[in-house]
Length: 166
Image 1 (cartoon, rainbow, N blue to C red):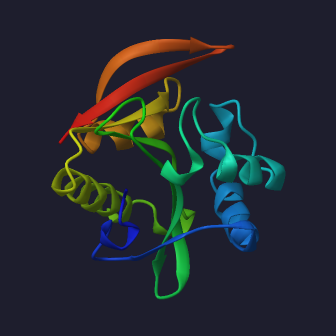
Image 2 (tube, helix red, strand yellow):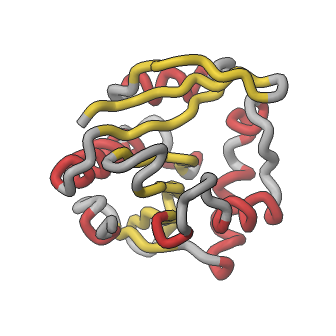
């Protein structure tokens, strides 16, 4: 079980729910480049679906749809899965920063602190998917120590499956 209070010493972290929908939606709307390169759309319905959907075989108790807060302002959203695709691997299904906070190394700090906690908690790696054609996502994840393991074709998109060893 992940202790979300230990994910970041720099930011307040809490689970997000339907009451946070409008704040999440505004963050997503502010990141139109992300949605140009993926199947998802920035809609309230999509966000609600993402909050509750887990990979096959993963119990919802291992899904953490999280908000990172700076002085009570939601600045980042992360979907973190415990034990996916297996055991001591964590999977980031979604990570998005509020547009106004991008380019300030805050996202990298959140990823670094999350990785440090997961390592201390016994995880061996973090996995995620990157839209191959999205230059911003590719740069961010590679800069933060993720290496491409393989490419996966999904509908008309190519996903780069990446890993960061802890």
